[in-house]
Amino acid sequence: MLTFTGDRLAEGRFDFQPSERRADARVVNPGQPVVFRFGRCEVRPACREVFVDGLRKSLQPRPFNLLLHLIEHRHRVLSIDELLDAIWRDEEVQIGSLATAIARIRAVLGDGLSGNGPLIQTCHRVGYRFVATVYSE
Image 1 (cartoon, rainbow, N blue to C red):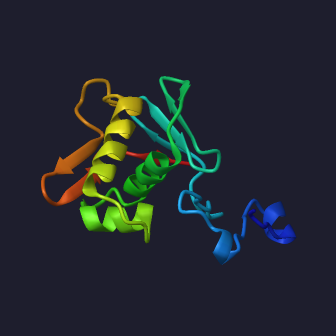
Image 2 (cartoon, rainbow, N blue to C red):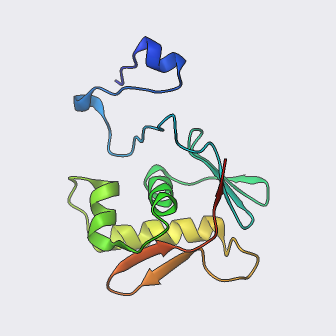
């Protein structure tokens, strides 16, 4: 069970008890943008929603967290190890889990840029980088 505290709840911020925080739970910081827009896509972190061409798309928790992490660190290539540590934390996972999550993101977003290339660049044997121009509000 997750525990929320009163004042922070009113501010839209949630405090999780450390023993109760799940690996797929992600706290949205008050200073974090409300919406990320790129190409034909829109990501709303607080609502955990993804829209493509105005239509809401379903994305599982881990791929959603991975997408947010890639967007937030889009100015550089993120190594495979860094991504595994950030998204799966202390869990024992294989690199295939990361590749599967990237594939799910790509399947949901499509090309996302009206044919102008991929949103997520694969840097073989190194990692991934979010390459679309992102506008945030």
